Image (tube, rainbow, N blue to C red; front, side, top):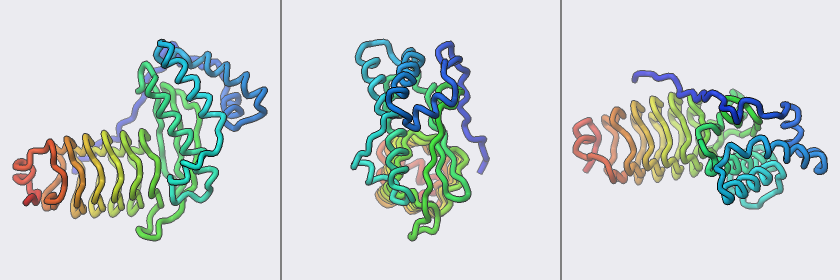
Length: 278
């Protein structure tokens, strides 16, 4: 398998983001929820600095301001309890999920969504770190400690909320990613050998030049996902949805796709490349 360098998104700062007008300490104080009276002043300054990132129509401006405000004035939400089954700290799980979801919502109103990136990494001690960027400026980093999955022996990311995160180059061997939300995730050049992705949602994901050998992809939705140059050796793909997934250079030799949803795929071509299709 030819190895590609992980796609590194490095967008030069525009005139809007070149000078945010805030010190790093001010941002940290805000997201850590210091006194509300003081915090409000910092929030207003942040909004005035960032508002030009979003579309200028009234709806987008109003929505973006409210989403940004909700992101930093965090309140517990019972709905977050379904995410990150393997999280060690429930409060940290809720904050992590809340801010990632709000960041993704903000992108929907951005003039250029590519200017807003969530870049993740996983440490050897199973700490998930995600840094939020606007252009090439790191705004905030949050961390979530995860445990070990009793079913796979790897990091427990079951029911994880990872949509929109770039985890290029990640080592996720034997990771438990069952039922995880990973729409638009980027996992280029990543190692997922033996991982369990049963029931995961991966619409419009990028999984280029990665190793998915021995993975459980049953019931995984990989619609419109880019699987170019990815290894699927011995992967279990019962009821896997590959609707319009890009598999031009994917190694499918010996892969049983008989029970997979191949809508939008050239079954004859996949069969000629060694895939098993009834």
